[in-house]
Length: 156
Image 1 (tube, rainbow, N blue to C red):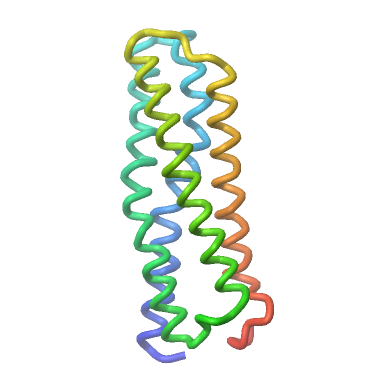
Image 2: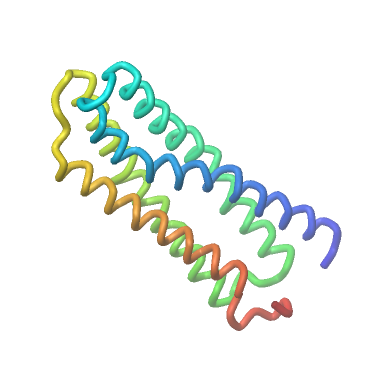
């Protein structure tokens, strides 16, 4: 493995840890935190929920670097046609789609309800938790594929 490949792989892994990790944690914490708003100090609890949403939104933007660096790494390694990589790309796209289409918009809807001092419905937070779980499961699967790389020609 050449120096450029090692640098790209290192940047890809660091970007995944720094960008995807906070989104998965903050997104998972959001539904229960939103449920607790009326039961706790409203201003503090709302601030927590807003912070969790901001973490998700900002780190989702930073997370774009993960597949970009991953594709550059795959190109440098000559594995663009590998089944494990194609599957990982598809799962990454699905995870991004769930985050953009379901998780972030539902977080924003709940924030609007909380801002209007409306009680959030348990069903709404449960649906958000379901989409968040799907997002997290997809990322966990991609992580396993990146480590195991079935059929990889790189010796792993």
